[in-house]
Every structure is written in C-alpha cells, then in structure tokens.
Length: 241
Length: 307
Image (cartoon, rainbow over all chains, first blue to last red; front, side, top):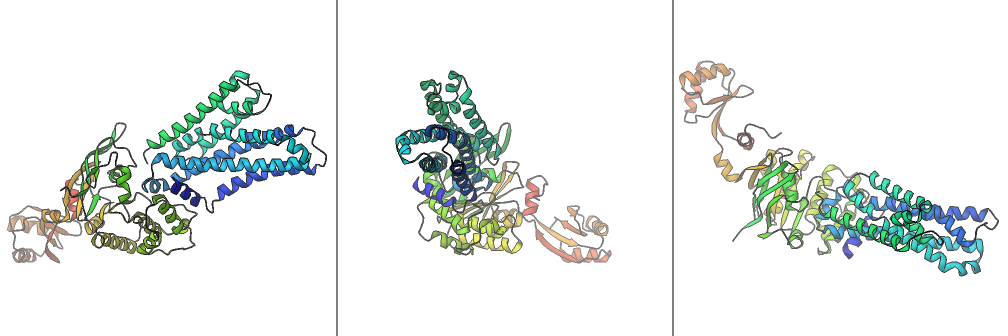
C-alpha cells in the first residue's frame, strides 16, 4: 500500500487541477474574511455566528463540490488516460487501487479542512481579538473538523458513480452538486426527514441548536459511507476493462 | 512436463447473448513467439484481457506457467509484462516520471530498472518532454519499456506496432525478436497484419469471429501451404485455352494483372512455356510458388481477407 500511495503522490506532480482546487479552497475563505476585515467595523454577528456564516458558503457549498471534483478527477483520469490497464497489470489488486485513491482524496479533503480552520482562526483573531478566539477555539475547531469529516464520509457514493461512469466526468459532478444541494436544503427539512437523509444530517448534527434525531442522523451517515465504499469497491472489482 | 507458459482451456467471453470469444484453447510454449492473428474484432484483445485478468472469464480456464490463474494472480502476474491496446500514460508527466510511477507500484524491481528499460527501447532518460508531446512511435516504445520494466518471463503484446511507420514497425519487430532470441522471453503477440505475424511468430493461432480456427507452428504451416505455378501472360484467354486443350488441366485460377495460378504442379515448366509462346500468350513470368499466410488465412476463414 505504501508503494501505491507513493505512486499516487508522484502522479500529482505538476497536476494543475489539484493545484487549482487547493488554491480555490484557500482563496475563497481568505477573500470572504478579507472583505469582513476591510469593511472596518466589527461584524454584527457573534464569533460562532460569524463562523457559521462563513461555513454556509465554504463548508456547506464550495468544499463538497471541490472535493467531489478532486475525487472524480482521481478516478476518471485513469480511464481517460488508459492508465487503468497499466495500473491493473502492474499488478495491483483492484481494492487496493481504489482504497489508495480514496486515501489520497481523504488526505486532500482533511488537509483543506485544516487549512480552512487555520484561516478561520486567523480571521477570527483579527476580527474579534485573540481573547475571544481563545475562548471559542474548541467550539470553532470541533465544528469545522466534525463538519469536514462528516461531509467526507457522506461523499463516498461519488466514488461509486466515478467508477461506473469511467471516462465521463459529469455524472459524478452532478451527484456532488445534488448531495451539496440536499445538504444545504436540509437546514429547512422537517426534523425526521432531515435526519433520515445523510447529506442533510451533516449540517443538522453539526450546527448547534438544529432540530435533529441524533441516532437516526448518525446511522444514516454511517450507512451512506459504508454503502458508498462497498459499492465503489464491488463495482470496480467486477468491472471489465 | 508441461512446457506451456500460457494455456487456455475452452476460454469463453460473453456479453449478454453475444459471444465474443468462444471456447478458445491456445498453447504458448516457453521461449517462443506466439502470434494471435485475426481481423479487427476477432477477439484477440478480449482473449489477452482475460489472460491478464482485465476482463472477467465467462467460462473456461487460464493456466500460466503451469498453474491455474484462479487464486494465483498475485504470484503469477508479476512475471508478466504487457501492452494492451494503446499504451496509457499520464500526459503531463515525462516518460521517466511515468515509468517511475509504475516501477513504484511494482515495488520489487531493480534500482536502475527505469533507466535500463528506457535505454533498451532507445528513449532518453530524464528527458523533459511530457508524454503528451511524444510521437506515436515514442509512445509505443514507452509502452514496451513499461512492459519490460520488471524483466518479465512472459510478454503479452496487443498490436504493438499499431500506428507506427514502416521503419518504426521494423525496429519494434527486431526488438521483439531480440527479446525472444537473446533474453529467452516467451511472447504472445496479436496483430491483424499478416506480414507482421509471418515475420515474427514461431507459432500461430488464427482467431475468427471469436473462434480459434487453427493453431500451428509456422514451420508446419509453410509445409501445408499449397504449391502452384505462377504465370504472367499478355492474354489470359489464350493461356486458358493452352491449359485446357494442350495440357489438359482446368486446375487453375485467373488472378489480377494477367497472372494465373496453376495448381497442377506436375506440368513441365519448359513444355508449358513452349505451349504458351506458340499461341502468342506472351509469357513474362513463370515460376513455382506456394501459398502465403494471407492465402492460408483466406482459405480457412472461408475466403475472407484480413484487411
């Protein structure tokens, strides 16, 4: 597995798409925070209110789309470049190959979440002062990390779609946008329905004070993650090249 | 002892109700070049993909190095190098970087394997040119370099000369021949180009509509090929009269360019020449020939040429 991960890392050298997605993931919160800073006055929200407001743009919407884009690219590129055949005849077991891709994707997603956390903390420190930041740091960090990780696991069905679509790019991107849309709309779903759908469960379970059935929400997220992972591996193992 | 490096038994591939490979049993012997010949869509690539585990087997069995492929993939596949269809590499990386990736995946190869493989196929090491700007010939060479990266005992090459110019084809052919003769590699090569297979292969398998019609050594095929007298005349009708009325044979065929094939090889060439000249048939060529691989291919596929 170490060799496979090293090979995946080598593949990302000079890769413009990964660089673009990473840059966007960093630039977007920086620009929003910079706007808040240059407006001069202290924001009208509390520090956590400001974090949630920022998250509604970045973590609810932009990051899942960028993450889906990266995952799609990692898988689909092997089909379009015909490298999948060289990989499989290297030989690499199909499960390992897919798991390797998912690890790289998860690493990217977590790294971006941590970068986002750092940017948010820096912005909060400038806007609200270090004392307020220290007081709320645990709450901010746990919200951002929990949100990032739960979003990551609910996006695993994208891997399944990416395997099935082979050379196409759009079906998995469409799924990403649909999942993101559901997640966003989930804030307005009734309590039970919102908890039943994995993508809407993520904001409901993460944002404090939301109406949620915690057991149902956690179960639906776990089932979604397991289902996505299982179907991606199963489909890839049984796919003719 | 079974000396077959590849042995398929009743190998079959079905897509729904369509059978693309039907009960194919091929036998590739150690140290030899086996040419899988067939028209486009005959099932050559699918057969190779099934051997390499890229495509699921509907029924039948594959044995590699005397062992069943089932449950032994991880042990057997590292002993194989392959090119299937177009060689696939990452377009934004150089040839060296691409090979480094596949070397890393293989894990257990020599330190300077990438350098040696590139040198063997005549590509520069540490070149700054990305794969996307390689010519077709360079891409094929890089594909071969990748196939030999782990010094495999068996090479499976699917149309390795596809898209190459005549000089490139000759170079690749010479290289494949040297892999067999100098390094003792066993090679399974597919092609729809008859001359390619005729010049390279020691053994041959002819696939047609998914069925293996013939499996034989090239030496046996040459023996089996029918002999005939080839003549080129100015008038085929006059020559036909001579053959039927003077030499009493109708075992001949008229070909293009005023040439004819006389399959009654008992006819004396001097007598034939005299008879043709005497009626003014204008003989420009007269010689004994034998069927080539294309004729043989046509014969066993029921008259269908390969191109």
